[in-house]
Length: 290
Image 1 (cartoon, one colour):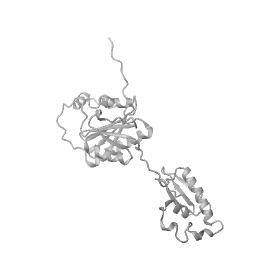
Image 2: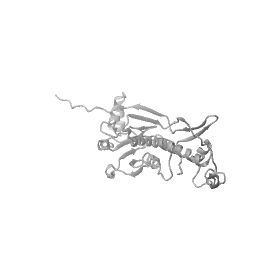
Image 3: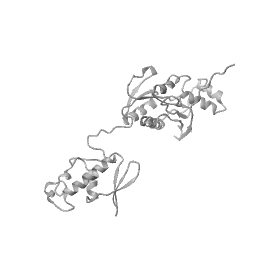
Image 4: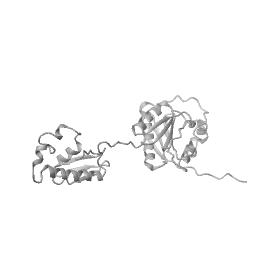
């Protein structure tokens, strides 16, 4: 019988007095009718490593001399029951067979990363760990012309200079995912991922933030650079890892086809608390006429 293995996140649970159950990756428990096959035989078949000595050890179900048994516990019957169970597990998506290549959620996606090393380095590691390909750039003109879907992530350990992201805000209209973050003092701002026309852009976030504060003139001047140098605490390894993890989660959602987001997040770098706010795109307004 072909060797089969449990898929990642799937577990077999032996329940006292109840037999075998399977725990799905979503945390649901399902009873398993093993028929004439003993639950421990099913567990052994689905969890042992290929070629282990017990596969051919005397007394094992697959050892040659033992195959001469008869009755409901005969190896031939057990193998038949196992084959039925393996098929059922495979049909339900609970098996990962030998030779299958485990694909990460970002496999097949190229992510272009720009910005400050303190953030781009952990982000690069996380994206690659999830199967994505990372390209680094310093300008939007450096973007490679890839045929596969891709996203652009721009990370700053400082406020975003006025106009820096204006050109990048046009990326979603080209079908490119657009994600960014920056730091203002002790707060890191993670803006929503935009993936198509009409999604929330950096310009939308700025307009919404200006509209939400009575200090809109001061905030606009701060963004324009009319302020003293920022001497506040920059990102630490922990806050950078948290920020990169949240950005990676957004990329995974985008790669899964969930499109853009309307979630603006603030990370307090002093205690790593995360606050979320819903933000909507700003409708286009016709110019005033006399």
